[in-house]
Image (tube, rainbow, N blue to C red; front, top):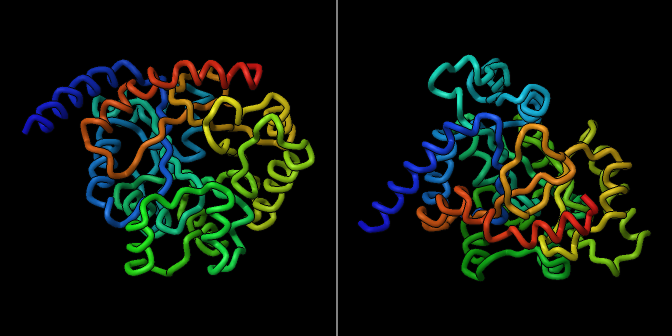
Length: 312
């Protein structure tokens, strides 16, 4: 009961604050989304649908160009949702809502099996950042790859659940077919290096090239269109580098995402779009607190250190 009251108070304050933030955007990042989290995750998505305008790539482009939010999922054409309804068309219902980018890192199969259908049921689309080397990796090697490259599979019971109750397969990671299908359904595919590599100062420049430039080329060759979005791996201040950022920009990445939690405002630097890291099974009051500024405050020092490391 106390938790419900706390949720109501926080939710009310968020709604009031959101009315002042039509030219801002909140980007969030998830990782594993096990089936056991579906109820909690659905509640989070319902909240996002009510208080934010979820953006796909086209909507984000408009947001940057015009300072307004564009929503997909409002109109449907031949089974595919279009992005033709702007915030100005919604009148009082949506005029002042901030934008939202919902992203998923690491290319895990439950993001395809669990998260994507829940998003689509609400007319939303996600941004999926995938390590390109995982796309063709055989199932029997995927768990070792994740252990070697520090891709968290969460709790052992989540892995047991994944093995016993997968909706589609027993794979840990998405393959090329799943990535292409997500793109066909209107989701955004981004790069998360080739091997989920943290770009620490000791990492050789030749490896940086493979993890940035070659990974981008590989994804684009497989998908058949440009990949413009990139998400750094990790989040520690020493995993951001100025030379890596320069290489990302020269490779052609237009939108570069961190995990340093801050609102993004019209006119902001798209080389540092800060995301708020969330778990799909967070207690709802904590979820509300995190997206209403708690994470921004907690990441203040790390955010400054990361920007200094990137020389921004």
